Length: 165
Image 1 (cartoon, rainbow, N blue to C red):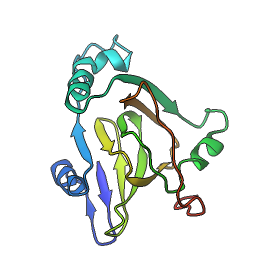
Image 2: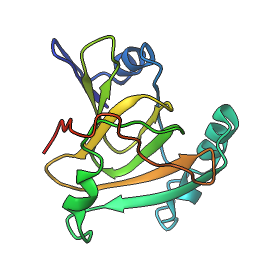
Image 3: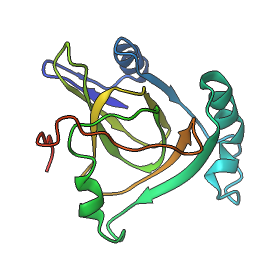
Protein backbone atom coordinates (compact mmCIF):
# COMPACT_ATOMS: atom_id res chain seq x y z
CA UNK A 1 0.00 0.00 0.00
CA UNK A 2 1.22 3.44 -0.83
CA UNK A 3 -0.26 6.75 0.33
CA UNK A 4 0.37 9.93 -1.62
CA UNK A 5 -0.44 13.27 0.04
CA UNK A 6 0.44 16.83 -0.95
CA UNK A 7 3.46 16.77 1.34
CA UNK A 8 4.68 13.17 1.45
CA UNK A 9 4.53 9.62 0.14
CA UNK A 10 4.15 6.73 2.58
CA UNK A 11 5.29 3.28 1.46
CA UNK A 12 5.60 1.47 4.80
CA UNK A 13 2.44 -0.61 5.38
CA UNK A 14 2.24 0.05 9.11
CA UNK A 15 2.71 3.79 8.64
CA UNK A 16 0.12 3.77 5.83
CA UNK A 17 -2.36 1.90 8.02
CA UNK A 18 -1.83 4.35 10.88
CA UNK A 19 -2.26 7.33 8.52
CA UNK A 20 -5.55 6.20 6.98
CA UNK A 21 -7.02 5.08 10.30
CA UNK A 22 -6.90 8.74 11.39
CA UNK A 23 -9.55 9.30 8.71
CA UNK A 24 -11.73 6.37 9.80
CA UNK A 25 -10.55 3.98 7.08
CA UNK A 26 -9.31 0.47 7.80
CA UNK A 27 -6.44 -1.45 6.23
CA UNK A 28 -4.98 -4.90 6.63
CA UNK A 29 -2.51 -7.02 4.70
CA UNK A 30 -3.37 -10.61 3.87
CA UNK A 31 -1.37 -13.58 2.66
CA UNK A 32 -2.98 -16.62 1.03
CA UNK A 33 -3.99 -19.17 3.65
CA UNK A 34 -2.60 -22.03 1.57
CA UNK A 35 0.49 -22.27 -0.58
CA UNK A 36 -1.43 -24.76 -2.73
CA UNK A 37 -1.59 -22.93 -6.07
CA UNK A 38 -4.17 -25.43 -7.36
CA UNK A 39 -6.72 -23.55 -5.22
CA UNK A 40 -7.59 -20.85 -7.74
CA UNK A 41 -10.80 -19.51 -6.20
CA UNK A 42 -9.83 -16.45 -4.13
CA UNK A 43 -12.89 -16.89 -1.92
CA UNK A 44 -11.46 -20.25 -0.85
CA UNK A 45 -7.81 -19.12 -0.69
CA UNK A 46 -8.77 -16.33 1.75
CA UNK A 47 -11.81 -18.03 3.33
CA UNK A 48 -10.85 -17.65 7.02
CA UNK A 49 -9.67 -14.06 6.64
CA UNK A 50 -12.91 -13.14 4.85
CA UNK A 51 -14.91 -14.81 7.63
CA UNK A 52 -13.01 -12.89 10.35
CA UNK A 53 -13.63 -9.65 8.46
CA UNK A 54 -17.35 -10.46 8.16
CA UNK A 55 -17.55 -11.11 11.90
CA UNK A 56 -15.62 -7.96 12.78
CA UNK A 57 -17.72 -5.57 10.67
CA UNK A 58 -21.01 -7.44 10.19
CA UNK A 59 -20.55 -8.16 6.49
CA UNK A 60 -22.73 -10.82 4.87
CA UNK A 61 -21.42 -11.66 1.41
CA UNK A 62 -18.34 -11.62 -0.78
CA UNK A 63 -17.61 -11.91 -4.48
CA UNK A 64 -14.73 -11.41 -6.90
CA UNK A 65 -14.50 -8.69 -9.54
CA UNK A 66 -11.87 -8.18 -12.22
CA UNK A 67 -11.16 -5.29 -14.56
CA UNK A 68 -8.50 -5.43 -17.27
CA UNK A 69 -7.83 -4.01 -20.74
CA UNK A 70 -10.07 -6.76 -22.23
CA UNK A 71 -13.08 -5.80 -20.09
CA UNK A 72 -15.83 -4.57 -22.45
CA UNK A 73 -16.44 -0.81 -22.05
CA UNK A 74 -13.65 -0.49 -19.47
CA UNK A 75 -13.37 3.29 -19.99
CA UNK A 76 -17.13 3.69 -19.52
CA UNK A 77 -17.04 1.63 -16.34
CA UNK A 78 -14.14 3.64 -14.93
CA UNK A 79 -15.79 6.94 -15.86
CA UNK A 80 -18.48 6.20 -13.23
CA UNK A 81 -15.89 5.92 -10.46
CA UNK A 82 -13.44 8.76 -11.17
CA UNK A 83 -15.96 11.37 -10.03
CA UNK A 84 -16.13 12.03 -6.30
CA UNK A 85 -18.90 9.94 -4.73
CA UNK A 86 -19.86 7.97 -1.64
CA UNK A 87 -21.88 4.89 -0.74
CA UNK A 88 -24.37 4.04 1.99
CA UNK A 89 -22.41 0.81 2.61
CA UNK A 90 -18.70 0.34 3.24
CA UNK A 91 -16.57 -0.17 0.15
CA UNK A 92 -14.43 -3.20 0.99
CA UNK A 93 -11.75 -4.33 -1.44
CA UNK A 94 -8.99 -6.91 -1.07
CA UNK A 95 -6.61 -6.70 -4.02
CA UNK A 96 -5.54 -10.04 -5.45
CA UNK A 97 -3.97 -8.90 -8.71
CA UNK A 98 -3.06 -5.56 -10.29
CA UNK A 99 -3.36 -2.11 -8.76
CA UNK A 100 -5.90 0.61 -8.14
CA UNK A 101 -6.03 4.13 -6.76
CA UNK A 102 -8.57 5.24 -4.17
CA UNK A 103 -8.67 9.00 -3.77
CA UNK A 104 -10.03 10.09 -0.41
CA UNK A 105 -11.61 13.47 0.28
CA UNK A 106 -11.72 13.81 4.09
CA UNK A 107 -13.48 17.19 3.66
CA UNK A 108 -11.52 18.68 6.59
CA UNK A 109 -8.01 18.06 5.18
CA UNK A 110 -6.46 17.90 1.71
CA UNK A 111 -7.30 14.89 -0.44
CA UNK A 112 -4.89 11.95 -0.61
CA UNK A 113 -4.51 8.84 -2.72
CA UNK A 114 -4.21 5.22 -1.61
CA UNK A 115 -2.52 2.90 -4.10
CA UNK A 116 -3.64 -0.66 -3.44
CA UNK A 117 -1.76 -3.70 -4.69
CA UNK A 118 -1.89 -7.48 -4.15
CA UNK A 119 -2.28 -8.33 -0.47
CA UNK A 120 -3.88 -5.00 0.49
CA UNK A 121 -7.29 -4.88 2.17
CA UNK A 122 -8.94 -1.47 2.26
CA UNK A 123 -12.24 -0.55 3.91
CA UNK A 124 -13.64 2.83 2.90
CA UNK A 125 -16.48 3.45 5.36
CA UNK A 126 -19.98 4.34 4.23
CA UNK A 127 -20.47 8.03 3.40
CA UNK A 128 -16.74 8.68 2.86
CA UNK A 129 -16.20 10.90 -0.18
CA UNK A 130 -13.82 9.19 -2.59
CA UNK A 131 -13.05 8.23 -6.18
CA UNK A 132 -11.39 5.24 -7.82
CA UNK A 133 -9.19 4.70 -10.85
CA UNK A 134 -6.81 2.10 -12.20
CA UNK A 135 -3.08 2.57 -12.70
CA UNK A 136 -1.55 2.54 -16.20
CA UNK A 137 -1.72 -1.27 -16.37
CA UNK A 138 -5.54 -0.99 -16.15
CA UNK A 139 -5.77 -4.30 -14.30
CA UNK A 140 -7.21 -5.18 -10.91
CA UNK A 141 -8.80 -8.27 -9.41
CA UNK A 142 -10.44 -7.88 -6.00
CA UNK A 143 -12.53 -9.63 -3.44
CA UNK A 144 -15.47 -7.36 -2.60
CA UNK A 145 -17.30 -7.74 0.72
CA UNK A 146 -20.77 -6.35 1.44
CA UNK A 147 -23.16 -5.82 4.35
CA UNK A 148 -26.37 -5.97 2.33
CA UNK A 149 -25.93 -8.93 -0.06
CA UNK A 150 -24.69 -6.77 -2.08
CA UNK A 151 -26.36 -3.40 -1.90
CA UNK A 152 -23.81 -0.94 -3.17
CA UNK A 153 -24.31 2.06 -5.40
CA UNK A 154 -22.42 5.29 -5.95
CA UNK A 155 -24.04 8.55 -4.82
CA UNK A 156 -22.78 11.64 -6.62
CA UNK A 157 -23.36 14.82 -4.66
CA UNK A 158 -20.84 16.70 -6.79
CA UNK A 159 -21.19 15.01 -10.22
CA UNK A 160 -19.30 17.75 -12.05
CA UNK A 161 -16.10 17.09 -10.07
CA UNK A 162 -13.84 14.66 -11.88
CA UNK A 163 -10.50 14.05 -10.26
CA UNK A 164 -8.97 11.70 -12.82
CA UNK A 165 -9.36 11.26 -16.56
